Amino acid sequence: MKFYIVDDDEVHRLMLARIIEDEDLGEIIGEAEDGSMLDKNLMVLKYVDILFIDLLMPVRDGIETIRRLKGQFTGKIIMISQVESKELIGEAYSLDVDYYISKPINRLEVLTVIRKVMERIQLERSIADIQKSLNTVFNLQQPKQETANALKKTSIVTSGEFLLSELGILGESGSKDLLDILQYLDQYEQYHTYEQQFPPLKKIFVQITLKKIGAPTAQIDIQREVKASEQRVRRAIYQSINHLASLGLTDFSNPKFENYASKFFDFTIVRKKMTELQRNPNSSPTSTRINTKKFIQVLYFESKRLILED
Image (cartoon, rainbow, N blue to C red; front, side, top):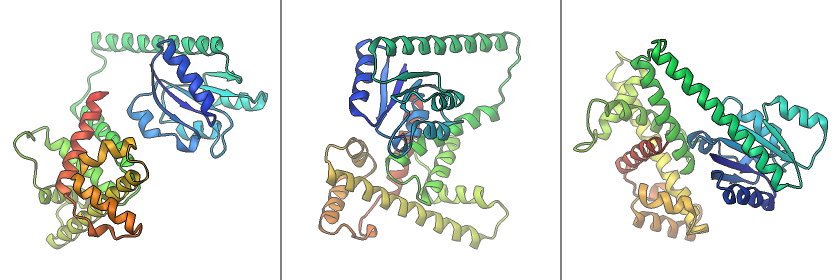
């Protein structure tokens, strides 16, 4: 089982993690000290099974966080809190919280609740497997190729969004272009192999532009949008190297810096950007030389790797 823990008290997070690990109940995928810091992309991408969440937290409380997760998170939720208000507990259960544990944390109670939730998850999965088998036997489900492609497309976009979030550029205007590129490359790979040749950048930008604005379209309009798309992507990549260099300056052992800086960029360029930021935090991002094609290739192959890991 995969667990995620959200609690503003580090002691409680450590206690819960220790109980889970000591009893070999599963893996702690992530932790956060406030609902506002919850990594929704990570939870969806890594298929978190059980979310532990505190009720009262300083910025975004447990109830508001659960409301924001509704429709995205499909796992089970265990709420923990010192609050014993029947109204708040009732509201929590109305939002599909599976169990409510009162603080101070009792090891035996936590173990009992976790095992009950795990049993329910396993039962639901067994029922789903049986239903799937019945559908196969009676030929009730005949998935079309378009459906399979749509699911695949969702997967590449989901993993791409996660990586762009990790790189600090999910909110940039060029992030939409990068996600469009991932979809195009995913479809392209169905008919070609990347072992010998990656499609030229110009072809990639033309294809995503044609899909976006439709055809027939005047050539001058296509060229204008291709150029605009290229500029948006380059600006996003510049912001990414700034983000990673800033992380490296703050903490050279930062896991995001260690994991992504040398993958997406030549490390000499990253070190140069770190030196620039150290001298002048407001230095222009355009002073840094980047390799757009390498960035896109790494983004695509890393997105595919994340899908395969699932």
